[in-house]
Image (cartoon, rainbow, N blue to C red; front, top):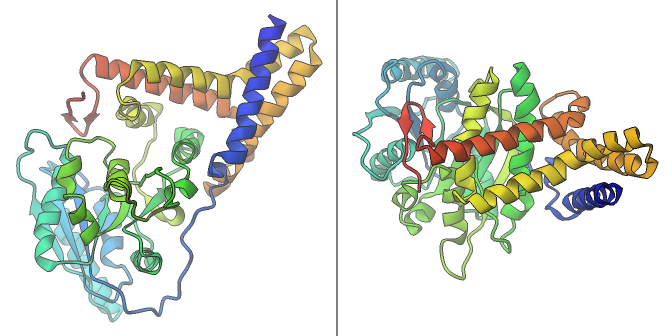
Length: 399
């Protein structure tokens, strides 16, 4: 038994050394937009497409921040009301009137807002992508240089759009995306949101996403700027119409869609653009993760098994071995396990700092990882029983 525990402990330590050394520096949380001088005015035309389903509560903040962007060139907003029942359309119109008045007081002109009512959801489309598709079809008449896909619950920093466009133009990128700063106020948000961002970066190291020589591609759906020509090149949103993880699928199509040829994309973090979506309970975060976790594994039982085993070996062996070493008096195993545990906690520190959370939460990473593993197992169970992909009152078939 001692030999098995020692072997697993050493293997876990080697895994963490490898993760910190060669996994694209994912744990550093350092990939950010470079600030630009705000006096730059020669920027291309933009059309923002905002899918909205029952978002009346957040529109006065999220949509308002979009309409008050400090962007000097042609910019308009198309909001697609996805058959809301809470008055989303009327709240959007009122928010536009308020933003127009505020912009006038500032000596500026707010961009125009057009509110569309979504057509019935056709078979084979997910609701969000269908709403976005209708927004893109409507926006084509303006032939914008870029589309901005953003959620209704995102509060944009005043210069965010200018920063995104400048970065895309300077680096000649086809897609630029921000992992916006998620809400982190309630107990469960403070415990689980920073690790969620951490795990996302581990799965898709941002340095690899931004490296044209690597196939890794990802985006964060709350804020995606994409060239119109790039979207047309991949055949539009219809090519990904049935996907639940639409942001990463879109990024993959843009970066690697053509055989033998890759196109540059960029994904980074921000502290200034925020998500307004609240997750006040464990269940709300659990449901958010379980909706697509098994999709990420391509609905493969084998990948699920390997994931569970991998998560256990990576995150659970160290604390278990540490306790075992203390109880049996094996100092070498206890110290090796403790070193592994501390490496694990250390790797979470930059993300905790980004979210202004206490460093001691890193020690709880094994518990947090166990919760995320259970969410992934639950995602598979939902799929097996035919109610996976449940979101905002819709259940999407999965295959």
